[in-house]
Image (tube, rainbow, N blue to C red; front, side, top):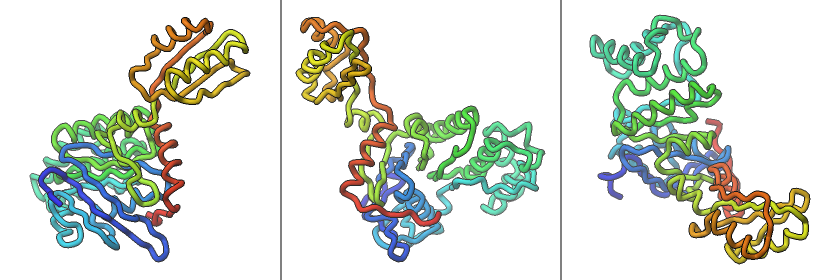
Length: 325
């Protein structure tokens, strides 16, 4: 295993909680300066993986290296290189935003003028400058999450773990977090992100690891994963008797099995060949004398990828539970 290219690496990582197998041989390879999205159904092992990589839980087996340091043999060095933002804001509601960050700075060894300056810098960077001297208990959920993110950035981490960073936030607050995460990656920080929001992964992640049953079921860029399940072509005809002709054309073009909806007068099919374009479909229908009132060809959403691939993985991977974390 090399550690020169990847900020996070794991090989055959396992974790058992009694009879519950939370991880069953997880392999990860996250390039430096990238955003990696960990997706998976509840109980897939995402949070367990993050806790092991952040040295909060010891693995049962396998090996993991973060920022060039083994998480079991050299956990102190790992902690010096990482930042962690969990699912729930860990700020003290009785302290002001500024006091919270200065306290976190002292706890991480950043003291005196340097700690105060770094806290003030991050308050501005995360859009909290005007609210810096209000108690965190008066902050909105989005503001508390931004303050929590600022705390995770105090030490300028090489690797930042974000576990469900925008859960429960309104769209504007979520957008603010997304902008900051993308800026961090552009500046060289490696971000490992777990999320239930598929739009979030689509917007932020350079690569996605779909975890199911404690293993990496599939890995790839958002575009590559979408290409695996293909686009969706659908045509609407003007009369029921035209459905059969539309199905023949779509079958010939794609090699798939069109699904007919006699009530809506539609024929739909998955398109895996990028050469099959909407104009080509329309020309072939016209040449076959099939009159259509509407036609569309749209790429799959990441949600469709998620549902398709986790469903496939579930048929080959025993179900598991993630530990209470």
